[in-house]
Image (cartoon, rainbow, N blue to C red):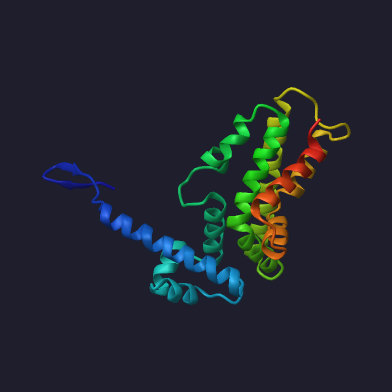
Length: 218
């Protein structure tokens, strides 16, 4: 609320330097949490561990995020988006090729690129959530949210396909098409083929695009 001085309302004091310092602290905490959650696991990592890794006090971490579950959610959000800006994935510059592609095949090629980028950034965080979901109720809820969001993303791309000339592949109705894209947009495929088997990212992207075309393109 604005204050009052000499009968006139005054604006609340805001320091750009203070706000930037707070943002840098949050970024350091998220980086530290990402490293620890992925390498140690969610259950084995405490807020005190994250604070020590980030070089801040535990109350600072708690004040910024409120709980370990909320911090994990922020780790995932930033891994998916690439930064902490409040811009939806579908409006990110790296997603725009999906909207700008001229035909169904090009849409799926572009979407394979999106999935490769997300896998590179977020495969480890996704696996952390999957492993912790059986033991932590707040993480189980987050895992279900991730599954729903991946399916919503698949449905969005299928809707885009339907705006272009040409039908989907025979037998690939809308729901079946969404099912297929939901299967292929799982970062676990990136983790298995790139991180574990050593595929080059471009080889993975081409493979993924080919599988998506096989499943959906008319």
